[in-house]
Length: 203
Image 1: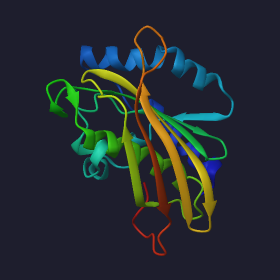
Image 2: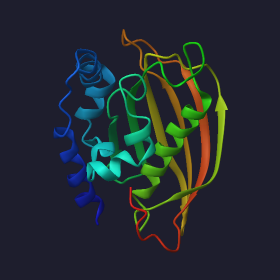
Image 3: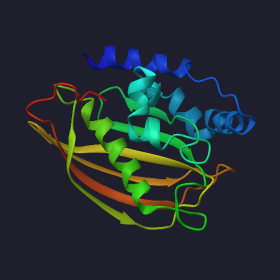
C-alpha cells in the first residue's frame, strides 16, 4: 500500500470515535482545540489520523495501546496522530489517566517507553517497503516525571535509513493547558528493522 493510500485509510479513522462519557468528551475536545493540534492540522506537510481505531474491533482489543491500555483512566481517548507526508516525522497527542502509575500520580516509566516505542514504530513503518518495523534497540533518557491526568505530546523523527534499518530519534513532552512552553519528560533513540518475513505483522 502506498503512503498516499495508507494516509487516506488512516484519515478515515477520525470519524470512528463518538465519545459517550462527559469526561471523555472534554478530553477529546481539549486535544482537538489545542493550539498545538490546530497548528499541525493547518500544516499541509502533515496528515491527521487516529490509527489506534483502525482495523476490526476484535483485533484492536488484542493490541496494547488500542486495547489493554485503552480506558478513561489509562489512555483516555484514542491518540491523535500527525504524519508528515514523506513519512519521516510523526507527532502523537494523547491524555493519560490515573490507573497507569508507578508512584502516586506519577505515570509508570514503562508506559512512557511503550508510548515512545509505539510512535517510533509507526513513524518508520510508514517508509519501510513492507510497512512493518520492529524494535531492535531502544534507549530512553528520563528527564522529568510525567503526571497522571495530563496531556502529552510525542515527537518522532527518522534520523537515518539504510536498507531494512531505520534509526529513530524523538522526545515526549507535556501539552500545557494554558498553551505555555512544554516540559521535557523523556528523550529517546532507537533502531528499527524491517523483518524479512512480515506476514500478519501489519499495524
